[in-house]
Length: 210
Image (tube, rainbow, N blue to C red; front, side, top):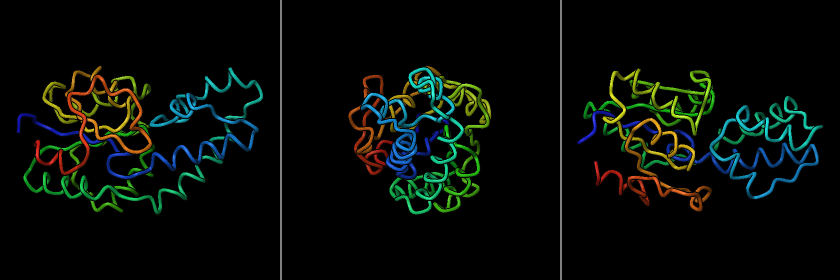
């Protein structure tokens, strides 16, 4: 393998939570009488609520972010309990770990939900570095999360391969100076992936490349 480490995104790569993230946001916004445009839905996909709150506060002066976040969190946490896992990727991660390949996990989501997903997927003690919402002041599309992961792994960014499913995740990886392969989901397939080093169709295709 030409890379010294592979860093996986969480949502949309290990677990199919992007539809749940968007659906919980739509429902939480609707309780305040806000109907999202398609552009606003794209803004939400792959992004933590803290990072898009200012947009909605400016557009809707009466927007109650605290109420929105509480409702969205409750709906989201209910959804991820049964969200489908991407078993091809999970099986690949386990095989890479058995081969002593250095692995990382990067997410804009919080650590408690990340730990639950890791446990549900059977990926405990697999990742040498985990970077979550709590670890960075600036999240995707800023490169901070991927730079932090490289630092935790004691590697140069150029030696890391990132697996993403969103445009903002791709932007973050490329700004960090990393190679990035994208596996789009049904939720993200129409996003701009022109910066990607490769666009893949499945975990099987990824397995054949590495």
